[in-house]
Each structure stands twice: as C-alpha cells, then as structure tokens.
Length: 325
Image 1 (spheres, helix red, strand yellow):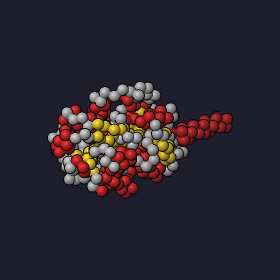
Image 2 (cartoon, helix red, strand yellow; image 1 turned 180 degrees about the vertical axis):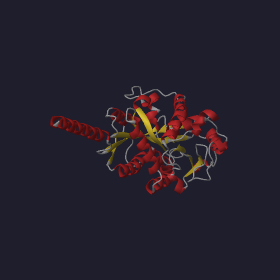
Image 3 (cartoon, rainbow, N blue to C red; image 1 turned 180 degrees about the horizontal axis):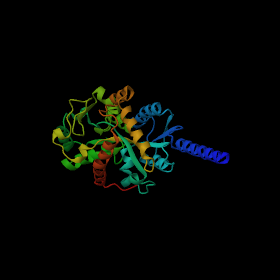
Image 4 (tube, one colour; image 1 turned 90 degrees about the vertical axis):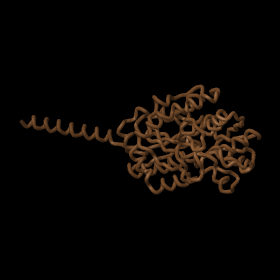
C-alpha cells in the first residue's frame, strides 16, 4: 500500500511537472520581440513601428526592439524575417512594395510574399497628393493637363514601381501626355528638387511635402482614394475631377506582418493590440503629424484590403513595362 501510494504520488508529481513545463513552453512572450523595419529611421514606416511597438511592449510586458534593415525595396528585411524561427519573436514592418511590387521588379526573390508571410495589420500611410509647382499656375487636374500639353514637364517619384510612379504613368496614358518621370532615392531629395524648380510635379506624402506646401511653392491639386484628405479638405480627389481608374482608388499602406507559420493565437493577439494602439494619444498625434486619416485596421479588414487591392497594384506595375532588376 505504501509503495502504491508513493508510486501514485510520483505519477501525480510527474504529471504536474509536465503540465507546468507545457504551460511554460506555451507562454509568450518571455523575452524581447524584434520588429524588423524595411525602411530607414525617421520615415512613417519606422515611426509607426516604434509607436505601435511601444504599445505592444506595454501590454505584453516585454521589450519590443525595432531594427532597421534596408535594401532591395524591403527584400533584405523580408529574407531576414523569413529565415527566423516563426515563434513570434521576429516580425516585420514594411511597405506595400515588399509584398507586391518586388514580385515583378526583382529577378530573384528569396521569399514568397504569400507563402512565407501573413498580414497582422495594415496601417494606411495616408493620401499621397499630386503636388504641382506654382510656376505652372495649375489649380486642377484639367489645368495641369493643359499646361503639360504645351510645356515640358518632369515629375518626381520616390521609387520605381511606387504609387507615385504608376500615378504619373496613368496620367500620361489617360491624357496622352509625355511627362518625364525621375526616380529619387526617397522623398527628401525629390522635394528638394521640387523646391528648386528642377521638377514641376511630384506625388508623395503630406508630411514630407510640407516644406513646399507651407511656402506656396507647391500646390496640391488632387488626392487619390474616394474621400478627401482631412489635412487638405479643399483639394478634390482624382475621381471628383473626372479622373477615373483603379490606380487612383488604391490605398497606400504599411503593414505589420508575421511569418506564416507563426501560431494563430499570437497573430490574433498582436492584431488586437495594433487596433488598440491606434487609439492611443501617441499614435493619434503621429497620424495627425503625417496627415494620415486612419489608424491600424483589424486583421479581417487588413486581409480583405490586401486581397482586393493587391491585384490592382500588380496589374498597374505590369503596365509600366519595367524590366526586373
């Protein structure tokens, strides 16, 4: 009896220990989470990663470390995250081209956007207004088109295959124009050339364009998406000015993504925290500074947007006839 009791007690102890070990193994997070950002410090993607990351850190009780890994339009960051264990400790904050444009613009892609990653939350990066130089005297799309028919016009783009690129290319196509497109390594040098009169038009973010908007050197004449921008309420949308096409309805976005094999409950928790984080004072101030009207979307809406607009992005880039690099 005594032996049987000891055996029973030992068995119970083993079961208790096993249960504790299982619970410990399932606990998450127990250490720092790393968010790999595909863009340099200082831009909207990096700012979002840090603001939302801090909120996630507060709620989960573990540090969230932001690591900038730039290069190849986000491909280097994507490969780093792909090669990391899908345990919830390595995530990526990136731009749309990492998930979409790179499929067509890079000859060799070391990751499969659909098979290797899953979207946690899309964070809209705001309207990207078309801004024209005051020297054109244009205040509407119609006036800008008329100017471009009789004058040599050069427009700036912040990257090959970017929204800025496809938007100007679509204007050329719809109106039979011959606007030259210059691709810059980011927005800062683009707006510097705009201010100097080197280019006569540009498409980019509200926050980066502020120096030319505040001085009056630049004038916003149209914004994409169906609704007007809160920061530029007098600027009509492309659609309001009769400029149709799916291109001008696209949502410019950044996104928090996770390895596809990551546990679903961890992904869902992060998605929930992203939505909560979007309501905080810090993120709301950030949205206002960048002229972004919407915070992080819930996961279902994020996936629906990606599935709906992704093919439009890809088709728009295909029409550019670009050779993969």
